[in-house]
Length: 493
Image (cartoon, rainbow, N blue to C red; front, side):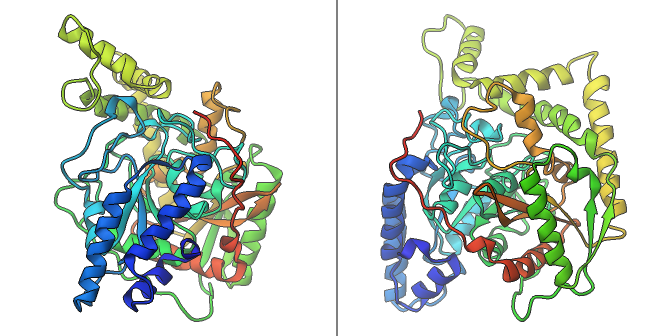
């Protein structure tokens, strides 16, 4: 039952000598072997790599070393768009199949330095483009609460791996909600840190002004522990803010006296399902009972945020993905008679439909004659969204919204309707446009499926946001619910 323990508990047991790192790793690998054939959370399980790392940790402890980091002995899964030295990194795309990075991303370096054990690479929407976990070239990921439903995306595998108790912690990336949305749909905690708090060095870029790496866990304490390990200055990332977050402290009686919370009315429109609205409204009442003052507010530019995002993100993606041409990385089409034919066939065969769609949109938006009408206009809307948040944070300490307007939908239900799929991110996208921190915490169930509560904070108020989420978690216990994974379910390829 070791796989059911929290990261904090595993770390304490390892440090006390009550569990070896090898015992912990073998337990997690056994759980993955039994559950992942039906969940599909992993693209690659790095069993030998993890066991070798565990043996070295055990040898250090046996030799009397007591200088271990806060994640010593804790298995952590890493989204497959984060570079891991010696472990294949594909971004769930055929075009990068077989690519083994010669270096670690900064977050992976920090995980290793803290004593964590990299257990494998998690499945995702191809190049982090998707909201359902269905666009991976290596098969879909399923929601552990109902294997016929999606887990959310694009960090689908990272969220599902934690929800199915395959690992206590994982890393994802969030460009328009890709941590918070799957966290909400699988009933776990997911944090999107302030843009610039966590280094993006070694993260394969999708949209550089929006991407941010962040943690998943079963509870706020574990998520805070992982956040503290990965956050901080990094000279190799020019967008890094160079700031170290203050230590996150929990304890005592949960209280929100003096905390001012805003509830933006634009996030409770007609598209929100009745069950989701009910759970979020109950959560807001519980926050009031903890002592917070709650008041409705308005973010009037919210209705334009989705349109702006789907110009800016594809525009940046079209530039970033130009490097995948068959020359420098991964897949190359065979039998081409010239360079241009090789480029064209490699990209045609290597990229999936959703990636091609976004490259085409982005290229069009940046093309001569259309730049002012689309990209420039989208950036102006982004400024309006940022100013809305600035005005709101003049009155409030944090904002409270649903994370996703619906519960998890059925596999394949929206694959042929990309606009409907894009609407699933409508509550999370404005946060990325403004570079703010936000966290999704479980707030109950609707029709047997998890619902997420989103808390949005000011720039670099990540620590306060975690403390707010912890106070809510202490009086609700929704985070303790676990799915009973149906091991008879099949994995769709």
